[in-house]
Image (cartoon, rainbow, N blue to C red; front, side):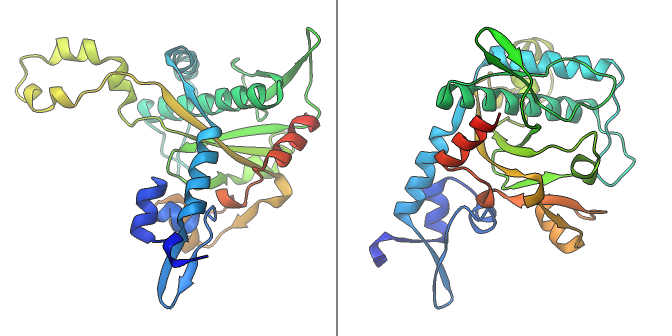
Length: 281
């Protein structure tokens, strides 16, 4: 590998479009160490961008609406969700965002399996009394729907996150654990709720003291990107209970307990990996 192909960390961030933390911790990039400096191959960075593009699907307003409808149904039925490691109940906006993101991740996987392997899958958008751990609940074949041969859970994280993270109950309890965990990354804007209500907000806020200072920053809804990053078997997850390591992975100040994790670069994501997974369904 010649020096002309090498990019330092700052240039690699610019080429890849991911933050330094992602670049250094995802295990999706092989660093080249020269003395005390770290470099990455420009060629490999471009290959990574191409692969990410091929595994990314644009989720339109109809898909978003389906996920929003599900999240509001969950919210108003009185579902209680708490933050990991605490008894604090999440606010409605956080719950809605998490549910929407999770369901968008499922839609991305459904699109991916249909596009790459012609596999028609049925997702569970129904409401249940208990938590339903499996996200792919049916395979459509010859006009009929059969049950999957394996248990699959689809997990969604933010666009720039680089870890599959699972709570203990998701891996250890017989009625919740899955055979395969798929990681998706969803580019859901933090202000997505404002974007879909932009017109109503402008009507309501027009004439208010600060409206002119932010009105041009308010954006309209745009299609959302969903990347299918990879998958792993339950037995390949790593149990992490070191608070310092968890702090870095979770991005929280005082994490408690333990998690099961897998760096995104260690997930299975080759064409042959995915083909084997599709055949196993």
